[in-house]
Structure formats: C-alpha cells, structure tokens
Amino acid sequence: MFREAEIFLSHWFTNKRRKPLVLRGARQVGKTELVRQFAANKKLKLAEINLERYLYLNKIFKTLALQNISREIESITECALDTPNTLLFLDEIQATPFALQALRYFYEEKPNLPIIAAGSLLEFSLKDHNFPMPVGRIEYFHLGPMTFKEFLEAIDGYLARFITEYEVGDSMPESAHKKLLERQREYLFTGGMPEAILIFKETNSLKEVSTIHRSITNTYLDDFSKYAKQKDLVLLQKVFRAIPKMIGRKVKYSNFSKEDRSKDIKYCINLLSKARICSLVHHSTCSGIPLNAEINENIYKIIFLDIGLVNHICGIDWLTISSYDTLQLINEGYLAEQFIGQHLLYRSKGIHTPEVVYWLREGKTANAEIDYVISQGDYIVPIEVKAGKSGSLKSLFHFVYNKQSKLAVRFDLNPPSIQQAEHILVIDNKKRTISFPLFSLPLYMVEALPRLIDEIRRDA
Image 1 (tube, helix red, strand yellow):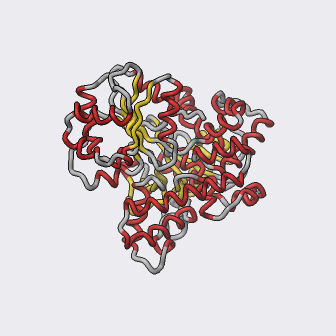
Image 2 (tube, one colour; image 1 turned 30 degrees about the horizontal axis):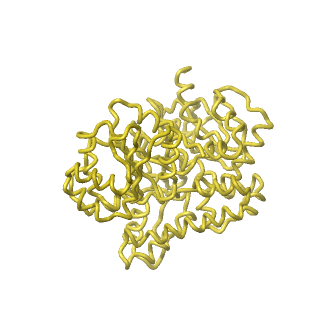
Image 3 (cartoon, helix red, strand yellow; image 1 turned 90 degrees about the vertical axis):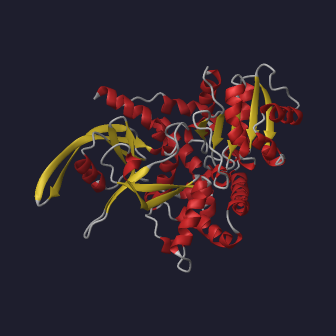
C-alpha cells in the first residue's frame, strides 16, 4: 500500500548530503514495511537486520570500531555493504542503543552507504544511556498511522483525486461528497493501522479488522513491561484503557482513577506519550509564534494514536458507527476530534515532531475553547471540529477577536466553502463587530488544509 512517506524517502535517498535516517513512531504503524517497500520500488538490495534478535551487537557498536561493526552486519545479513545500490536497514534500533551513536561514524566514514534505522521506544532506551547523540549527523522522520487519503489510495483510489485536486472556491460534486463521507465513516472504524487497512482491503470484512485491533491492543499491553516497573503495570493498563474515553476533554486525573495519586497517573500518561501511544495537546495562549512556546504544561487534552484502536478499546463496533445519524455523530463528537487531531499531528508529513495545541479560556460565568490551533507562516489559525452539519461558533468568534486571526477553519460534514463571517460580540458592555474569512471543510479534507491555507495566504 502506498505511503506518502515514500516521497520523503526518495528525496532523502537522492540527496548528496544524505545523513543516516532514523524512523520514529509507535509500534505497528508500518515502519518496517515502509522501508522494505521503498527498497523494492527502488530496486535496492536491502541489508536488513532486526537488532532485537542480536542484542550482543550493542557491545560491538559501543566500541565504535566501524570495520568490526561492518563485518558483523555483513555476516548476519549476508550482504557486502559496499555493494552498489545497497540500503542498510537497522530495525528495532532501541534494542542496541549504542548503534545510534555509531551512526555518526557511518556518516563520517561511509557517507555513500544509505542507512535507515527504525525504533519504537527510543526515549526509554536513551534515558538509561549517557552517550552524546550524533546531533547534526543523523536526521529523523516521524511516522504515524496511515492517513485517510492513504486509506483511500488503498481502497478506492479514484476518490482520492477529489481531495488532492481541490482548490479554494471549487465546488465539490455532490456524488463525490457523499461517497467520501461514506469512506470516511469506514475509516472511523478501521483507523490507520496498516495491518487493519490491509485486511479490510483484502477481505472487505470489518469483523477481521476488529481481530487486528485486538491483536495490536494486546501487543501494546505486552510492551508495557519493557518500559514500566512491575508496580506500575496495573495503573498503566488502567490509564491506557481510559484515554480513549477522555478524548476532547481537559485532563483531570480524578477522571482516570479516584484511588490512585495524581502524580502516578501523570507518570503513566507521560510514559504512554513517550511510546507514541497517545499525544498531549497542551493549552497555549496562542499570542505569538511558535505556539508551543506559550503552552501550559499542566493544562492539556489527550488524543490517542489511532481512531480505530479508540473504537476497539471503547467497545464501539461497526454496527454502532454505521447506524449513527448526524445528531448522534454530534453527540459522539470525540470521533471527529480524534480524526482531525491525529491528522493535524502529522501535517508536516513527518519532518517535524508531531504536535498540536489548543486554546482554553476559563471564566467565572462562561468558558471558551478552540479544539485545535495551528500556525502556518504568520497565520495563527483556530480550528473548530463539528461532528455534524451544524454547531455554535461562539468560541471561534472570541478567539478571532482576541488574537486578531486572519483566518478561521471549521471542520464538519458539509461540502467545502469559504465565506466572510460577521458577528457582533459584547465586550465590556460594548458591541463590537468582527469580520473574518471562515473556511469550512468536510472532515475528510483535513490533509489538504496546509496546502489550502497557503493558497489563501497567497491570494490575501
């Protein structure tokens, strides 16, 4: 199945100043298959080694003796590293942390050898080692679950063109819009884990998809013992199963458990975040760029790795999702917020660390909240997510007024449109009129947002 990350890998591979590349991401998001597929498409000889199976290599990597390291790798892979068109792939690199340090010397002494490393739990391995990271001599790529557009490319490729070819102001054919909404609803259930999409592509069976979700969930639970102490495992499992039910809500530790200490719950949340199983969406004042410079680390929401896993853990089956009408989707708004959030995290297409913020104003009489806020160039863009076809935009109006935003975005189930929104706010007992471009997009267009914002900026 096609992954857009292959485009990045192609640019990386042909770069004359290429550095060893480290793929980062949660387990089972497809890192290994991505490298194998890339090598096959480029007709490269893949020297692949799973470092979890050769733990003794950590001592050899620690010596930083590149000649000895290369001989060991060649013996295991049965491939000479100086063979033309050879790609060295060090999988599960977190199992031998000193291999990360050795990448510097591969870069300096074997600059013509393309190297990709992949690891799922790097943060946990690195915290126990004090060696200096090869800053400036490696680069990272962050891989998440397959996106909705990648899902479309695998299942119904023709529909994908309506997303990639859309330009601001275009009309969306009604038939295409309806089909995209139907496919998006399927994605809400299958999610973006590659194995789940592949089984759906091959069998068209959503029952089989549920089996995959169960297997992946159990894998994560089994992984807990690799990065948590035995005494923390029970609470870690409790927090893991609770997070999908907390999406879209400001975190209160008492909602996770009334019996456990807040600091213990926070510790478990941070562990899961390091493992990329969940992401913290911090509140930012959003008064300037970069947005993450103004976050409050004590105020945050959580989004899970993947919406398909969210449904599995919450016990929501396809019959439930397929039966939702618009009103029910509004009541189940966390589905829409998770869908948009997991796509916004990777809007840089893997180049930057996945992150997104939100805005919250808590008052004595009324609160205001913006689901997500992103920046692009000099634009600070508030984003509201409406699961159905309607919904109040009161918080959006307040944000635009206070932050002087040049553009606001609303995601819902309607066809795309852009309009000049006007609203009268009462501020300090005075009426104030605000006017701003409101860009409304259907949920399935989220991946096109960065491109469309740039289009609006050029025409401004």
